[in-house]
Length: 210
Image (cartoon, rainbow, N blue to C red; front, side):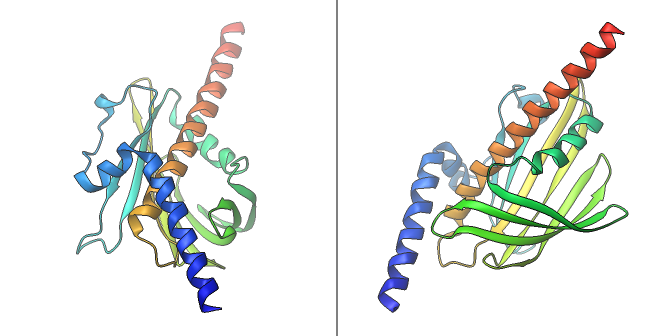
């Protein structure tokens, strides 16, 4: 049994290592201390990733992605909620309870190395059109997961940020976990950007016809 467990953990660590090595420059940012991107430095297409190591003030590492979306905040806000329902990394997302600017929901994540899948109950606290903060209530696998979506109005659109921290509870280097997390953040922000800009273009076309 112990030999089997060691083999499983070794395979898990190897999978994460391969994932992070594929991230290339993202891993370099982790060790080099990437500069936090500003709106002026974004090219309007790419997602910018920044890695933050743990400090005395913040006892865990985190990954932040930022992208410019050519759509107003209200459209981006709505799209972030819609994207959750079509995320290919999720088997489902069920709302468990809802109150004013707060909701609890259960998500089942799939395509996770070795684990195959994990179920998490999360709590959202929202400030409409400004931010969504989420935290893990319970999970059958993960030890911790928290972060936030942040929305900032800027010229010709919205600056959207997704910041996240995940503790898998497995004895693997956190930098490997963060490298894998960076890829997921990049996919999600890219998906929201595409969906929101498509929706905004359709709205603009309808107004032009009217």
